[in-house]
Image (cartoon, rainbow, N blue to C red; front, side, top):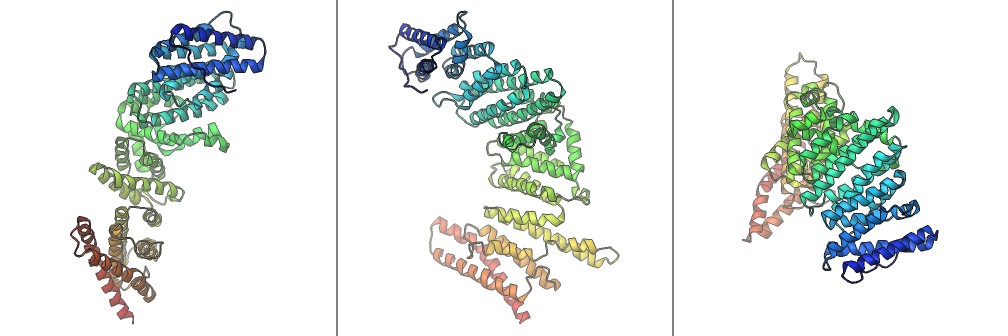
Length: 603
């Protein structure tokens, strides 16, 4: 039942304490009298009064508001500790008072301590099974007028005590609370307006919360113990991700790392996703609704655990990771390496993580893809991982585009090339094509098209060497040496020179991509003409005529128009535009000449 907030009568401490005493007496009488409607009204008036006191003390709108808050909160605690207070009163007040008491935590350290005491008092006197949903509901609906970081700390601490006090169905009840805690901490940790001390206190409470689940695990028998240990592992991974996003707290990361071995988690299992999938199956099973309640931060935390181990030896020791063995296994096992690359996308794609983590992740990726890994591919098929590999590479292109650190951009590009080289030839073109078609960056499209041209150059060299050496059993290799030399190249060039809109590309915005596409087209055209082949279909009269009429001539008109419009303009933007189009115009005219020459030969 809602009611108008009761204002504080006067500024004196005596008046507010008298008002509190009257409200508490009214609550006690109505609850004991069994009048449900009247007791609801009395409790609502008490809560509104307390909210008025906490709001005034936090905003400091009235003189002595903080002192009043301390006295009011102390009065509440004394009332709850009164030997004459019956259980019926305690139970009725337990639904609302924990939330109201937590709002005082941001007033002062003294109020924070009493807020803790009030919540612990309820946990002592009430059923832990009843208190768990009460605390979760309070966590899930913080008051917008209070500081969330301080508000949630007493509630999270209370949950730690509730977990330990539970007598049965531990897994089912803790499983309800964990997503609520993670959701709240995620919302708080991604905000930037909290002091370090506030967040440190919050994460201290969260770590203690995880340790309380570990304590419960030790008391349970094997069946429920396995489920709760898996739940604990998922919880720790999510909190590790939030710690990393928030302030890069090493001391909290180390404490969380020490819990990982208890959940049966291995470093290799985390970086390949196996441990996460195993724990998720144990905790969630086939329940899709349960699945939606768990954060994607689980996979981010799993990936970051290995990045933390890369950064800090003490983390690897605390988590009991044999980091050298993990990297060696990934270097030698293509399937596990693809799984690891797929997991790392969570780090690359995170917009909240500090760049430092992405730098270490790129270094880790460079290490596991070092050496001649292409010779270790054998007959492995990465079809199952194509979607996740694409996502990882797409996220890696974002680092190449947006990282301010030149070394990081360079290393990310090298990692991109190595991962592409680690993908079997039969699937590499599909990945590159998808990256090109899904990129909004002209510069990135240009880079990727240059990689395609490089792949075609390598295939050409291989094909030439096979043709010269008749002793080789070259059937399968010849097939593989024409994977990029196919009609798909025409589609790729067309996607840039004649986008989905149907007209010419937007210039000068896309000049980098257009220049690279023209260079690719010219390279293929010259090679096919010189070797008298037509793997790509570029040499057919219809395709030459199409390229001439639909790609090159409209582009020439566009470039010519832009150049004429900016010819006599001394504005810096106009000068930059003309300069950007000069190399494009040169290659464009060479392409036109080549097409015209080839059409004459075919006439």
